[in-house]
Length: 57
Image 1 (tube, rainbow, N blue to C red):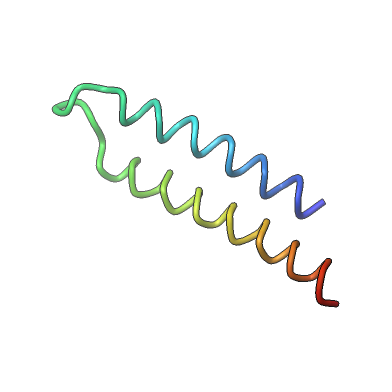
Image 2 (image 1 turned 45 degrees about the vertical axis):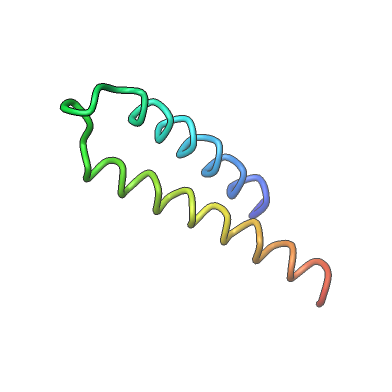
């Protein structure tokens, strides 16, 4: 379940981050960019944690 949750968070935040980066420079929201980037890192952390738990424990 953690792997699925992590992948969903990664895909969703990557799509939203890409959408925000495609906007014109004046219309970009820095707060949203930060939130989407942090969500992307959080999803990667969940997937990495699941991988470590499956391989080492």
